[in-house]
Image 1: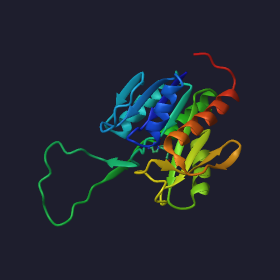
Image 2: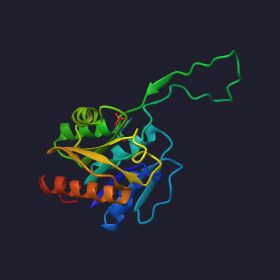
Image 3: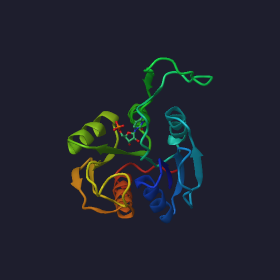
Image 4: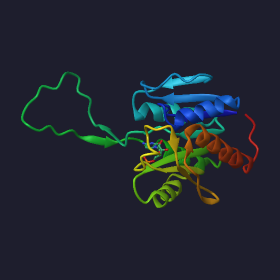
Length: 204
Ligand code: C5P
């Protein structure tokens, strides 16, 4: 089985990579330059921008069974890159930012247009209206499963080993108890397996 996972800096993305490696999947990890070294990965693609991640993921998607978008992709990026050091002038500085491409939404759109493609999993880190926002995200981006979590909880945020997530999938909403990220990752893989089993057979 071929899987793309994005983002793996000590979070749930890394736990997903480890869980897939343990199950013998061929994992391509697309990640930023500061990522940890994760063993048992077939390919590591290091990217430096949302645009590079977009290209790396989209160009591989057709050959993949699953894409797990665990990266916290920046929503905006500077519109221009200064060729030289910017000299200071005045007391304030205004930067113009432009929207980055939404990788997950583009994957969802492509799959809708072609009628085939990988199982798509996205994440929704929220501080309020967690379920409503995750549900809206799932519909808007046309993905199979959204893993939502309330990052305002002290025991379920970015810097801890545990997480309490809620799955929003085709069968509705399922709340999981607080548990180690490795367990959360195993649960995500189990849901993906169900999603794969429910779709027409595709041999790669
Ligand atoms: O809309 P929001 O950024 O909250 O959605 C989060 C999900 O969308 C995550 O799975 C993230 O990896 C993905 N995403 C993306 N491209 C972006 C922004 C977010 O694929 N430019």
